[in-house]
Length: 504
Image: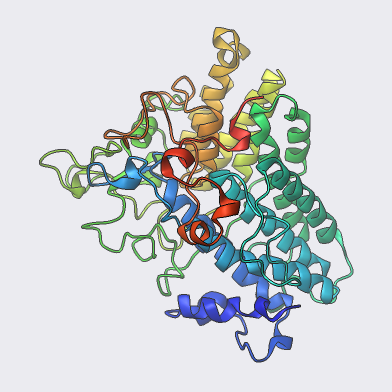
């Protein structure tokens, strides 16, 4: 194994110096590589995959998904004015991914295949998370712990990358099923996700497999609803299995959930945070729920706090900024809710999402009754997770029990059913960048997402009716590897769909 695999640790120590010992909990002595073992690498992999990679991925697109909106009118990321100053790439491939590659190899070297399985899960997750926002990605030329790092890697088409990632998930399931391991998965308490429970790790792999197979929905020759449903049946099958871990309110900013005031995500200054508050689209969706007699979704006061000045739930219109004569205290701010407190988890994927994936797949294969059943469980699982009252859950259950096949096929197609599923999935997946995948797969349809509209003052490169479809590759890769990267101008990249976003 080349020495580069040990370089990532001192790099992380410099980048996260404020609380690195507590954050990483690894042996970072670059002069003693023989001391690095897989049980030293699993915790930083999980933490960095979540708090560095997934966080940066959602930070870039939370306003695109319209969970949040800027307090300033026409602020660049609120109106889709993105450039190559985009660091999801860096956080994923420089910070998080090398730990996955090393864990795969270390598991093999130490006769501990369970660790290889965890590394394989996160290799697939990290590379496809990037690919879902960018498109073509390196795979064979990526650092693997053995070969020298290739500074100008070859990019492979997204279809090929997906095939390799899905095969890697299959291998992860095999490796996590192995019972002969020299080092236990939770040795040193490194498995902060499942505490060594390999069956839950296997279900995590199947959940991701279901998610990625479902991304093929525009590919009539590849989309297989039965394969999606089969993966769902082997994925999370009850509460308490979500792939997540709780952050901490007792440490530094890197210990806290990044969406919280205590975290590092831009909310430490409530007078001028990166985002002014929740968007009008999201707030209004929660205030017009079909699941409650009052019309107000019972999750609203759990997800967010009311405006300080009015006690009401008010969102900011994307691209408009604060209305005249109003301040941030007139809007529902981001920190302090279920997903945005210091000790809140930030899920990779949940049981609720698996049920919504199953509902969509059953709907597409014309199993309407099965779709309604999976949809209902997806909603209720999220409500239970958020601690919604039993009375509100009973009311929502009554509402959903009244749904008929006609409700899911109104107009002669499945659009109405998709609207039920996708709006509730949107509510259940706050901040998760997977929502942007869904919105593009649904072509930002207002029939599916009622009242969704483009931001005001939208970036001038977008013509009427055009929506953002991808992101620009990061500037360092553009400068170093332009020949393999291709045309990275915003007017091209932001408007060009990734492979799974094109119908065939």
